[in-house]
Length: 414
Image (cartoon, rainbow, N blue to C red; front, side):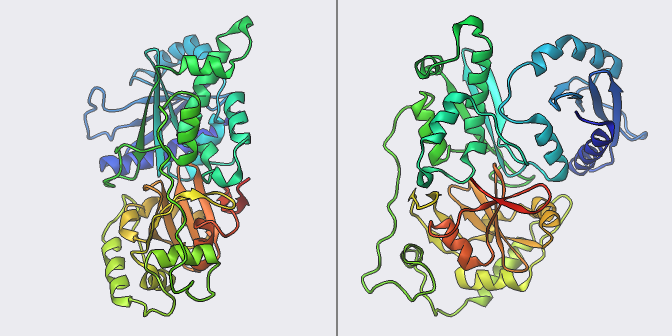
């Protein structure tokens, strides 16, 4: 059940973000009724409202589901919602809408991925799932994931929009089968034979990656092939780097990590490049958010002095999770001042961008104590208490990442 006090806090957050986007203040408005809350923002008195300039949102009181409506009087929206509510809230959902709603009031949804899956002229939508929730994947998707070896699972893949939109569609198909029994895999493949999937990056304002096409992660891509959404293609696995001819460099890292770093051109004992690090820091700090600015600190400068422009290319099954390419380049994650500030408030430490993982699928950041985090469509993740430990986790030889909970602590990824 969503309370009025929660909705008022959520409405204030939405209004603040809309005010920043528009460049002038908007006032949050909430009107409670028997089955929900109508939420909108009001123009300043000195501005004339324009038709279609705003939307109205209804938050369902029982489930937390949201739906958008035209800018009509709240009494009209309430009446429309009551009539359409059974269709809007009756379908089985993979994601807990109340958790998603509450998490969105704490931290921005970015970075995430928007998935659009069209089947038989109906389009289904999903975003990556963040927040403290247990996802209710369709039994067929759940069974597929259960059979995957740990090393073939991308971190947080079950929270990815690609799998959520697939589960949502299969749930809806099951809901409409009445006495025909649940879908079989053959039924699912027949349903999805003509499916069309589109994925898009959702990023902060000004980020050139925002709105560009996204690719499914390795785990989701294989699942989508399994269910017939995507055609089979030869996997683009790139084997782990071989040990260099002269042997592995030093004993600072476990052999697989040392080999990956050596393959990327790194060697222990090389002179840190502080001038380059300071230049990168200056360029990143020039990229400001709508609400916050980046601020560097010694741990970030040291990390960049030693590892800036490190680029690994291996993509393969690891010991505990799927290993993805890594690029230490803070400029690739520079448009993150706002979301890093909100994440920093949760974990209790300042954050600075460090680079990206995969094909821009995750953004990496370091805090002022040297701890390393990742932000992606599945949430925020603790990678290690030091950069060395985080490199071990990212490159397949460290402990699994731990998801950052809504309260700022973290829980190991199952």
